[in-house]
Amino acid sequence: MIKNFIGYHHLKAETKVKDYKNTDKFTFLILEQTCFFAESAGQIGDSGILIINGLEYPVLGLVLDNDEVIHKIALVKDIEINVPVVAKIDAAKRKLVSANHSAAHLLFDTLREQFPSSIGKGYFNDENGLRIDMWIEEEMTSNIIEAIQNIVANKIASNSSKEEIITDAQIVQSEYNLDISFGNKELKGELRIVKFGDVSIQLCSGTHVDNTSDIPDFYIYNFESKGNNVYRFYAKTSLEQIEQAIKQTLEQEQEEIKALTDKYEMTKSKMSNLEIESLISAIATKELSKATFFQWKTNLILLKSKIKEHYIQFEKIKRDNYIQKYSEAAFVNIDNINYLEIKDDTMEIKDMNFVADWLMKSNSNALIELVNLNSKIYLCKSNSSKSAIETMKNHASLSIKGGGNEKTAQGKIT
Image 1 (cartoon, rainbow, N blue to C red):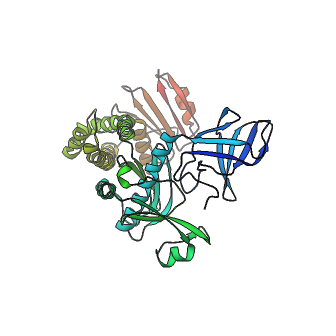
Image 2 (cartoon, helix red, strand yellow):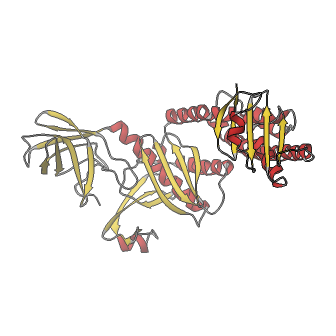
Image 3 (cartoon, rainbow, N blue to C red):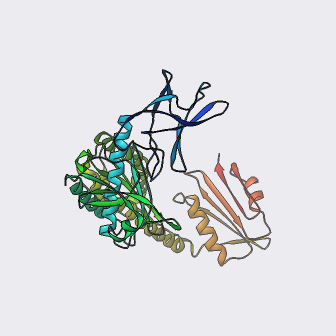
């Protein structure tokens, strides 16, 4: 429990200095009472001002020490114990933070209900939204996330009032069946339970809305895998912030969408895929809404997977074709070195490397030059005494700028 904290029900406190410490630039204060919440319980600290001797001092930081809130402000040289202080928090920020914190409880409890083996790995909320990390054995999909979001929305609509219960740790465990472990130790003494009807109950020292209906909205705008079955969920409760997040997501994904589309277009003439073309068409939009976001996100995730599969298949077919095309390539032996020059305007540099490496497996003491005159790229590989870099530099008919070593050299034809 936070000592002398009245901020659960008050946004302003008329109080006095209980203790202080001055440094060269700052004053650190403990007040007899405070409405300021210091960052803890996964919740960001409050912002606001302290009024001392008629002057306003923005609160620069808040720290919990021995369950007391320490307020950091600019240096007050004439500060004394018992000096009157008026503490005022940023009410607009607190309102957003409290809504996000209550929504985080609803989301956490919903995840635990839907996935009983899940384990919380931490969460954080501020005025801009909330995030929760959970270990979940099942694989998360956009459809599952949408279903979870709908359950949370129904809990918000349940019009459940907040109930605060202060009780002993043993009662918390025996009567309310709540876990009192914190890290490697068990919590003791008086603890605070925050309960919303029958939709949520958790131990918590943070600030919350008075009723679930005070949460303006709820939207999971993103989720990601952190590895080892840990998923991170991002959500917001402000309608304005939700709309902005959806817009930003669309803008941020545009570059990758273009890259995916371009990648497919490069292969389309040789290997088309109607499913991929349908997905590209489905995500080609300049506007998204809450109603369309999850389906769009599902299509984008699926497109990424399908493009990857398609490209792997395309590369395999292409390489098989190169093997068939050059399996009978005729080397010319000059001074006991097997020379081969391949001119092929369909090759990229990775194709050149593949063909050269494949041919050298069955041709020792060889030097292979590969040229694409259309793209103006050149590659030379050698497993002989003849240097690849010297061959490129001293090419009889081409001027090439590049680099390499005795075994491999590549460059741009100028």
